[in-house]
Length: 185
Image 1: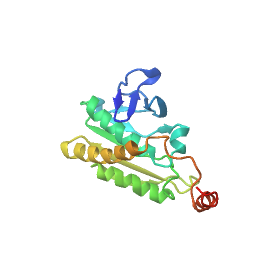
Image 2: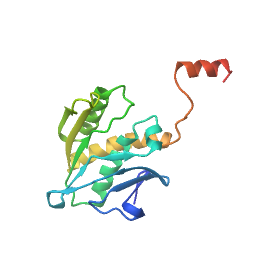
Image 3: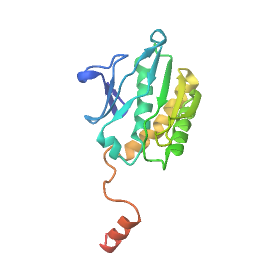
Image 4: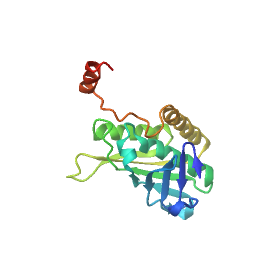
């Protein structure tokens, strides 16, 4: 099923059904898999946690996981009206924000902006490199749905301007800029 710029499918290219792993694609390219996606509370709640990104996502200069998360939430609200809450746990390290505290703060901000409650940060066990786990609960209601769609539209605008995989793989930074200047580019 297509949602925004992404396609969300179940295993083996089948239509997604609640409780299955979610395979997320962009223009036919697998971005990653959310697995497991358990149903809770008699089938009225799902839990999102384990997103396994593909290399195209890891190589992207933006936090594609946030965009995938927002599209998945919108997809669930539009296709599965029996789901009244989405619990979330973010634990995967993403090296785009300058460190674990900045990543945790960005995740908290996303959850709060979309109307999540019980948002909290805990540090992972010793030896995990100072990483943090961010968790929260998003409840389906008119106000939260509007907030979700507002933040999702902001993310979509970014990916509309530069689709996933379109970010230049050319080296960046002061040395790369100096090299391009010296070469006359």
